[in-house]
Length: 151
Image 1 (cartoon, rainbow, N blue to C red):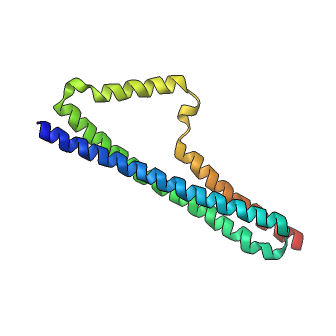
Image 2 (cartoon, one colour; image 1 turned 180 degrees about the horizontal axis):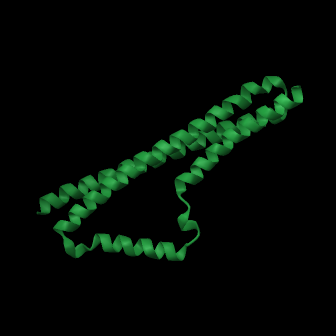
Image 3 (spheres, rainbow, N blue to C red; image 1 turned 90 degrees about the vertical axis):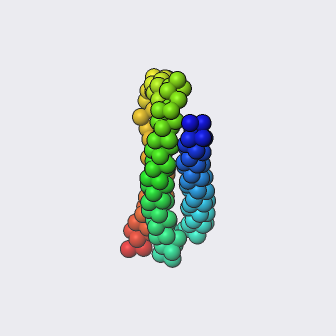
């Protein structure tokens, strides 16, 4: 039985490692998008809201939309890995019921929800999506202002 638990534990750990890798990739992508968007906004501020600046504002829309889609995909994959890890965790608990893994997680979850009742309901991925949507919205707003000023 110890060999089975070791295999399950290794598989559990691998799923968490995959989820952690996805979060690292998401953070890297988000940082890159924010840096590019900041540079685009700075460049637009220096050059002014002329029609030529659409070559900066319109790609910002695409960049923000790409960030939203990428964050949604990272979230989907993360959920997959966390669910797989929970399955392995349950399998370990079936073999070693005295560990009470499920009860421990449920207790921690309840304590966290009670300690942070308002922010607990906010999903982290929705904050990342809002950030990238803000980049896209900035590009849209700049483009609209440019069109209005040039009309």
